[in-house]
Amino acid sequence: MKSFLSLALIFLCVTSSLVYSGCNKEKQIVQTTVTSHNHRSMSVANVLSGFLGTEPVMLIGGAPYTENVGSLSGSGSTHNGNQGGNHNNDDTINMLRITGNQWIGRDIQGLMVTNGVIELRKEVFRIYVTPSAASINAHYNMLKPANNEFATSNNAPNGAYLSLRDGNGILWTTEGDQTGSNFRVITRGVSQLPATTITGVTSCKMYDGFGNMKTFNSDTFTIEMGL
Image (tube, rainbow, N blue to C red; front, side, top):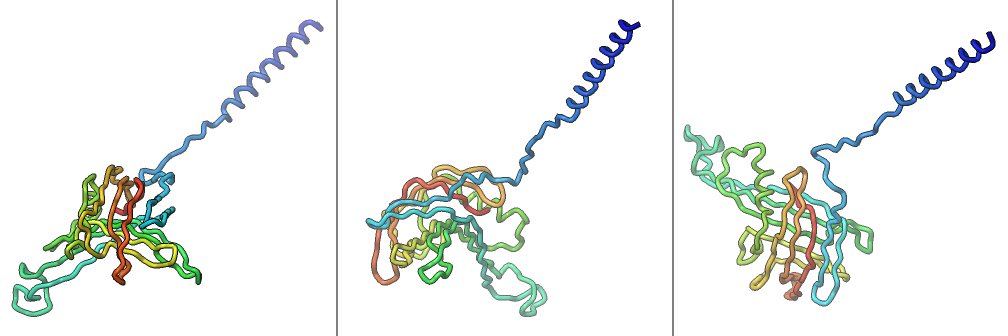
């Protein structure tokens, strides 16, 4: 009788152990990480470094952006001859598409200032209907690997534009002659809103607006540009 009770007790203990083990296995939930298709790596430091003249430049943590600036020119007439109505084929919409990255900081008074900008610009003519995704694709196409002219060279609106603020707070821009200058996009990332990553390098002339010029020679940069 005692032997039977001992065997029964052992059976109950083993059964309880198995049931408890099974329950624990059911409670072991495997955690997975779901990444959104719109997620972009935060490892892009948006660093622009180089030398403005003999002064070292190091800008970190810029933010990508886009801008579309449009203007209308033409007769303003319509199909029924009235002024100020719908556009006809004599009207032209000039749009300047801009994709860029900017670095914001504070001056000695604590006011927000722009310490640097890199932009690529392209002028577009005769746009009557703008498809919903047209500007996104257009901004991305502007960033293809290539050598680019400068937007202010010979008053041309297309190409690269840069600005840099030196250690004395003076703002230098590429608004001036850019003979011999170069802005090269080396690689371009995937088209993924709200930005894509490019690598590139530039050597250009920069002006302070008072007749002074310095050369900016960048290191190879990795930055995000807006889409």
